[in-house]
Length: 297
Image (cartoon, rainbow, N blue to C red; front, side, top):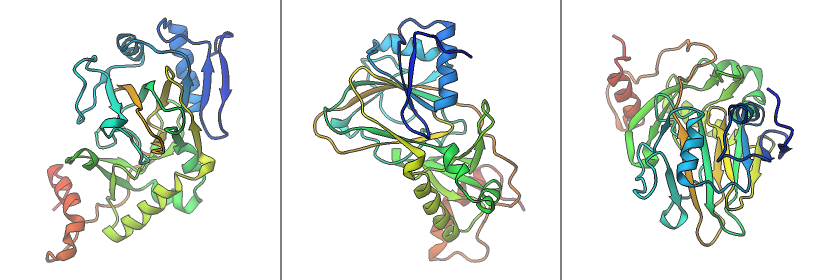
């Protein structure tokens, strides 16, 4: 897919990210939408400055990429279209923990389209990390082990720990075919096939690994900028280092099936024998497996 000659694409880091000018999201054409898709496949996250779409135009643009969903747990602003999720820093809306959006869902979102409505002059940048680069940087023995594992994710940060899903630790992107490391510190709770101590150690390593500077890009916002990212191969993090208000409005494209690099070769780890004080570490996994009839005989 060729990009319009009127567009200027400026890569922002060696790992991911590009700023694109010459685009008008309020006048989408099939060629523009396909160009955005192509740039996302290449750069994973792109930024379109000087847009400032109305809420209705924001929603209309998002619908070109698929069916939209509001946030499943956080309260919507009744003055906005239901597809728009708004976060205000003055009301605690600062996502300052590395995460991939909504991984507690069976089909987490494909992509997000964010409009920076208001931002501080200094601070409040957002960072993204490439989960392709994070996977590629692992040793071959580590890759081999991780491709046979799955992880339990939940919505505890939204006070909904009962909302859970299990996904492969390594997922395959349905368009590019590339492998991505698919665990995050915000929503991932447990490696299903490992005991609690092993799981904690591995998740601590992996969630720190994805933050390595060489996998990341950092973007300084200006009001009116649109940011678009592929939720299947990135994580992001807001720097909570600012004073004053910061308001974002976001639409989210509904998800697809998370496909692993290969089927898991091990059974879920379930504690055997009598219950004890340490059984609490396994309780959530046990009840999830029971609800899905995956405990076996």
